[in-house]
Image (cartoon, rainbow, N blue to C red):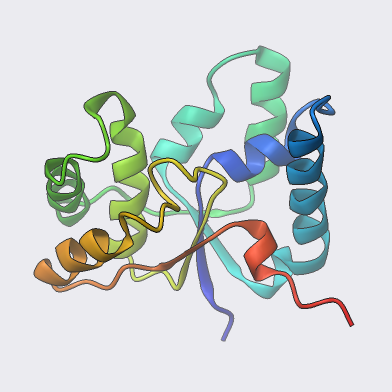
Length: 159
């Protein structure tokens, strides 16, 4: 059985983005493409309606590319449990209301028992300062926090 992975919007956004100019952007794009080519099929990939909503925004050509990239992934519903957990995560105070979608990604991934949450969002989602608080709020809802990783962290070590 393959591990269950929730893919947050930043990953397909980086995967389909026009080539970057900054070294950090180029490195992120290269890492994402390597992961996509080498590891994508090692996981059962899930997204949510929130991922679709975010991917559809912006430049029409780029939105089409993002939506195409995620079209084969299973869509998880946003449940009442997801909404309650999202609200509890927002109540922690480190994710602002304007970034409520980030709390929704965390909540959907946890409420559907994902093994991993894959993201490049290291401000609100993959932030070590917040991990213990996120674990506690998930546990208070009878849920486990998925392992939150970037594509780099799911690559096998180079031999």
